[in-house]
Image 1 (cartoon, rainbow, N blue to C red):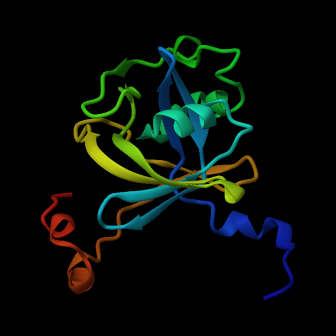
Image 2 (image 1 turned 135 degrees about the vertical axis):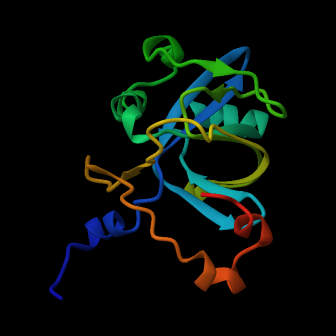
Length: 185
């Protein structure tokens, strides 16, 4: 081991899946790219980090809901493009040709081409850190979609995708909830 710049330490931890977060406010949909996400427990609780610099922040604060969509590697340029412009000046759905559909329990839309969409309600906002605690209220996935590798941001403008699946479900059985154990690969 050798010293590593502390201001780059986050690049070892940031590699959770890149997400697209949709919102709906004042009759208008928006979508933003979020790379800082966290699973809080097995009961569909998550956290995202954002803040007032993002146009969607006010919609999340006001409506207390959003959708977390999980894009795949084949959407990389769209995901980066969404993150490089603001919904304040741009209709990102039009600009990037995003197909959306009505969600079941929230007003924010689902994104068709993504691997999965999780409808969420805001449980808490920890403003000094821009942390939004979310509770999933419905989930949607496309098990037949080709190109199933999620994107992972390294935090320095590079991305990685998943490699081969390494199955250790049997070994981890004592720690996993029943809902995970019964899923088929």
